[in-house]
Structure formats: structure tokens, C-alpha cells
Image 1 (spheres, rainbow, N blue to C red):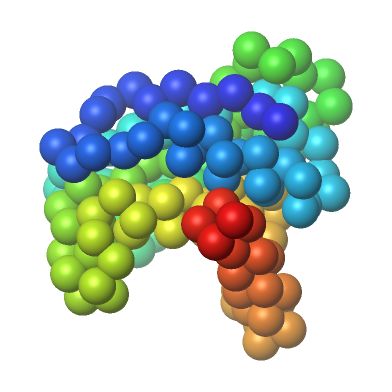
Image 2 (spheres, rainbow, N blue to C red; image 1 turned 180 degrees about the vertical axis):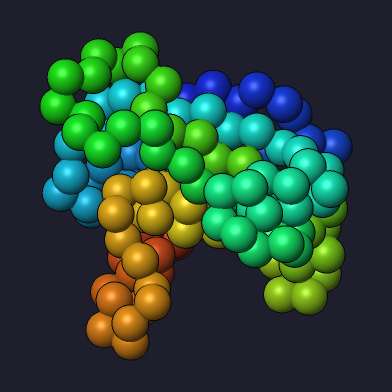
Length: 146
């Protein structure tokens, strides 16, 4: 299981034990080595839009961006920062209302989704979408229904 740092705190409540449970569930369900450190950062919409434009050539704000800083993780140590998740606090608040989840659970949903992206899962093709959705559902159920 990997370590994580929350570099900026949101205005809504997040529970460290729930985040730990999410990462433990991902570790148990996804058979990919996960021993490095992940940074979690909250930014404003303008900053996320700028990152999205610079790194993805998409000139719009988004709810979350996931970055991995290495193509080969084999030589990294547990304390090495290998991943980063950048979240829009504003988008989380908007989507929390839209999806009736609340801000905290919308954040958890985005963390699960983002970590799966970092672990090389994608949803561009229909089959890949189904695989990723199935993993998200399994992780969600393990964390919130047990």
C-alpha cells in the first residue's frame, strides 16, 4: 500500500481513516505494486484549467487531474513521490450537489477514480470503461458497505 500526503486541505471535511480504507481496498483489489507516495492537492478552477491546458491541451477546468511522474516505478522507494492528484474544490462542491453524494463522498469517488488512472486503468474504450467501472464499484462497496 502506498503513502500519501494531503498538501492543501479543502473547506469540507475529509476523514483520514476513510482515505486509508480506500487505499487499502485499492491495494487489495488491484494487483499492481503500490509502494510509493502520492500527493493530494486542491486548487482553484483557474489553476486546474491552466494545468489541463499545459499537460493535456484541453483549455477548460476539470474536477481532477492525475499525474504519474515515472514510467518505470521499479527502482522507487516508498518515500518517493511518484503520483499526484490535483482536485478542484469548486467542482467537487458542484458535483456533490449534482450527484447528491455530498462533498466528502464526491471527493472519495474522485480519489478512487484518479488512483485507478494512475495505476494505468483507462475508460477510452467501452471494454476498458467496464473494467474500470467494475473496479470502482468493488472498491466503493468494500469501503462504504462493509
